[in-house]
Length: 206
Ligand SMILES: C[S@@+](CC[C@H](N)C(=O)[O-])C[C@H]1O[C@@H](n2cnc3c(N)ncnc32)[C@H](O)[C@@H]1O
Image (cartoon, rainbow, N blue to C red; front, top):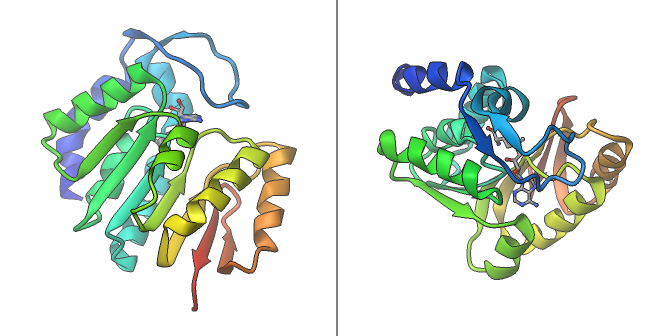
């Protein structure tokens, strides 16, 4: 894909960067790795791999989603795959201010105008926004089963007619898997797909 060629130098720099940044850990069940971390190590632990990035890109393209929400920006690489697949826009939420800044710098350097990067916690963001109806939601942060169920309840009024919700790491923990099983039993969603790493829900009729 053409944008991947433009992204390549930034990706190479990131993958091998020994630069340290001070991160704040917001995912209650994230493995504790320490506050000062290299960019390289954040890339390895946080960022979805290219296979999943391309899969999500294709899903957005095929479903013609225009309002996209990513919960968990990290360094912003996956955000770019989402943004390049739509004629609309991506809203991406990240609570850690340093990671948020890293991602914003990347979006600015690539002159990506259809990304709104917000530095906030998921709860605060969701408490304050009612007007948007998202077509596609990628939930990739705070991998705690109870929290995920709460976020999804709060997101329901913010879903469009045929919203797709991708819940990442459904097998991260017993709690995450229990939450996924509750979602499987939720009639609000007409389609549910277990892709082992992530689960996909679809609101509305087939
Ligand atoms: C797995 S990473 C996201 C990776 C990104 N989607 C990608 O594929 O490149 C999860 C991110 O969510 C953020 N996060 C975790 N819990 C959060 C919360 N409650 N509110 C906001 N951000 C949170 C973390 O700081 C972390 O950067």
